Amino acid sequence: MHRSLAWLIGASLFILLLPSGPNLANPLDEPGKPPGEAQETRATETIVLAGGCFWCLESDLEKLPGVVEAVSGYSGGRVANPTYKDVSSGRTGHREVVQVTFDGQVLPLEELLQVFWRNIDPLDDGGQFCDRGEQYTSAIFVENIQQQQVAEASLEALQAQFTDQAIATPILPAAPFYPAEDYHQNYAKNNTITYSYYRFRCGRDRRLKQLWDSSMDG
Image (tube, rainbow, N blue to C red; front, side, top):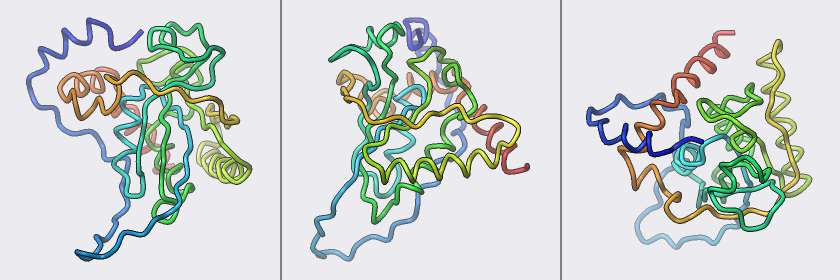
């Protein structure tokens, strides 16, 4: 189980500033609205994405223009209202996930999924980075046929980049979403040192750089 007391003790010693990881999210530029312009009411869409540690995926995705909200939580399991302790045990069948609410006029689902892929290891079927077990495996939970079609096309395009390895990220029907405990929400913002230490020690950015630099070269 990750983020144990050992992580917190190590974080207290992590006093040197780390160089920032690769900017894999590549947020889209969004021109600001002129002062005083009336805000339009736009329809939003929601999708649930699993990519290992929800602290990291939430932090990566909430930076994107067009993302209205990113909420850490649990989905895909066999019991109602699981706790972090339940999920991290690996016995409930839930994954750590992020529920992303976004404005499709600003950030189409196709583009959101491109960012999602570049912030996970889609080749890993045993977890993500240092976090191992079903609860940390990646997945896309789709709510309707339109999301499924977009997700399938996105996965096919990704598979074309990795012709010698199978993509391990499944596309699954939406399941009940349970928000994680309050202390997990906005963890990267509220616990900068602990989060930076965890992300560095888990090797997330090192693996992402290796994976995606390699795919671009190929």
